[in-house]
Structure formats: C-alpha cells, structure tokens
Image (cartoon, rainbow, N blue to C red; front, side):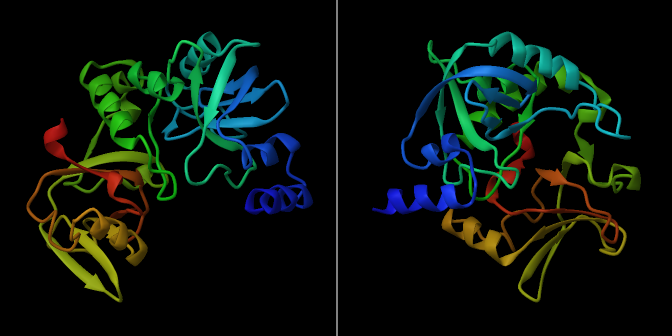
Length: 261
C-alpha cells in the first residue's frame, strides 16, 4: 500500500512515469539515451539520471566559463555510456533531486560501477549529501588514489587541495573545494559547533557543524566539539565568505584525516 500511495502521489505531482516507477521497483534496468555531461545522462525513456555521490567539473553555462576538466569528463562519460548501453540503476535513501532527476548508482552489465570509475580515472570528485551516504568510503578511497596518481582533474590548479592557513582567497567563494589544515579551537554557539583554524575567527578559516550534522557524527561515535582539535584533517564543501572563509559540514564524510594523503 505504501508503494501504491507513493506512486499515485508522484503522478499527481506530474513527475514522469519512469520517475514514479523508480519508487516502486528497485533496481531499474534501462538503456542510455544520451549523455549531457560527465555526471548526467538521459535514459531511452527520457528520464534524466544524475550519478550519485560524485560531481564532475561544470561545462560553460551562460556567462560562467567551463571548469577545467569539464569536457574531458563529458567525453569519457560518452565513451563508457554510449547510446543504447544497458545500465542498472540503484538508489539510496533519497532518489530524486530538486530538479526531478533520479539520483542513482549506475552499473553496466559487466559489473562496472560507473560512478566509481569516473572517480578512479580522475574525471570526478566525491560529492555527497546527508541523505545519500551509501558507498561513500569506497568513493573516497578511489578519489584519494586518483589524486595521488595525478589523474585527470587532479593535475589541474583548480582542483588542488587548499591550505586552511592562510585563509583561502575570497575569489574562491562559492566553489566546491578540499581544504587541509588543523583546527586549534572549537566553540558551540546557539547549538552550532565552530571549528576554528586561527586565533581570530573573524578572519580565519572555520568549519561550521549545525545540530542535525552533530547527531550524525554522534551516531558514528564521534563528538565533533573535541574530536578534530589539533588533528590534521581535510574538509570538503562549498566555500562561503563568512568572516574569513567557512565550510558548512552536514555529514561526517565531509571530513577525512589528512593522513589519507
């Protein structure tokens, strides 16, 4: 009954039949229609599929120039996902994004996990959300290996790991970035934890961990107020020009020990 109600609700919301079907049967077998870019393709039914857990450099959009590696990632995706290729879609906790795309781990008939292969070959970096956390450790390991090998986007300046000290330049604001450094202080203000990398939080780099994320850390046996102090770590996320610079952490996998490097 729950699946039937979900199906009917999606139809009422004018989602495509294919999208509604995804909430009823898992996994889904289909074929590739066309590739849009390195992390998105369209099925033969016309449903847009976003590769889950990864992100590739953005192609040119309006006045925004293409990021380094965007077209190489697109061409590689076209190579491994040619038109008519059989694929199996597997889903995590949340199978749709706000654009109506299905969020999926994509597998070929020979067992190749496309999401991981894009990362292994250096065409994508790991990109995760608190409601889709399966397989992240495997993807992070693949990313670390690709970075160490200098594959693909990891050869390019845009994708190099930034240092937390000195604070990243303001022109980096809004970009997804990996930042390495050692938090030296922590504070909890109105329920939000702040990990600070210098003596002046008004100008230094900071990690922000809201209450919902704190619960996820504690479920993993980690107390974020004390766990990362004086420990070299790598944090990933979008840089925000708050005071100095800030990354908001919404789930534990955004923070790795710097020893992984």
